[in-house]
Image 1 (cartoon, rainbow, N blue to C red):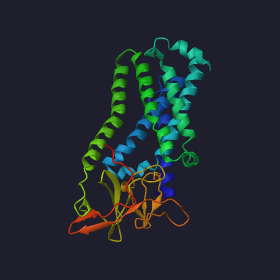
Image 2 (image 1 turned 60 degrees about the horizontal axis):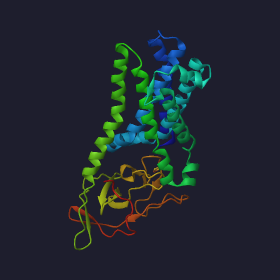
Image 3 (image 1 turned 30 degrees about the vertical axis):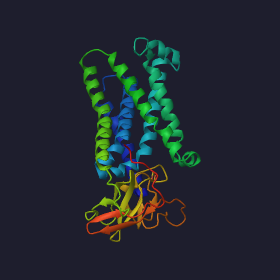
Image 4 (image 1 turned 90 degrees about the vertical axis):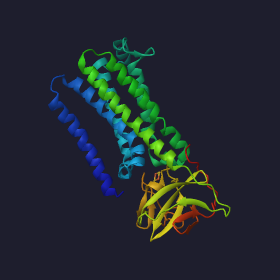
Length: 324
Ligand code: FES
């Protein structure tokens, strides 16, 4: 994705936040301003986090959504900023900056004995750690695998936030909380359903044929793979990306060395296969990045016989397993 496109997405996000607060206030002038700000910041933060968690599986189900993956980090940091704003507003308006006052006020709103503000605070701690370490400096210092392990904690934060919101809603009375609860389950159910659907789709695609007596591993027919397109396939229990460049098929590791992004969901730009997550590029013929960059991915030799393309010899050995 170009820098211009990224700026456009940032501008769209800024506009959304402006419309959310300004338009929301125009639509709901009833509650006083403090209550409105607390609720508006909480709702938008939760919606954005649900969107962040939905983008990965959505991109696996619907290829155009990969363009939005590129923006996921900015969405995540914006979510954290809204969450921090919400926490600050609650602490200021409801407790005069005294956390003990907030806990006293939430005596009847507990989950397994834990006051709901504590759940929200724990989620915010996780999101803060993620936001602070979202820069590439930490990625390079820790390595992609360790960095990614920390950032998988977003699911724990999401679970804590979901319980935080639900516990708060459960203490309300009347029909509106029920309507809100319905909306809550629809929002939470979306990333869950998308993850399940993407998992089912990938499991179906991960059935690799065994090598033949000649050692060739059949990968399938790629006659429909357009120029500049890529597709992930499973070979010998591991994933590789098949790319068409200048009419010829090439195979590289499906795993981007930056943050393990799926190169098979990228496409060729300026002669390089571009990772859909943050735009790292690799020459499909050599696996090398553009001049001046040292990142590279493994390449694999292919043989096409008739309509079928085979992996000729997995060298270097494939190392990344397909998820079961
Ligand atoms: S995972 Fe970041 S560029 Fe590939």
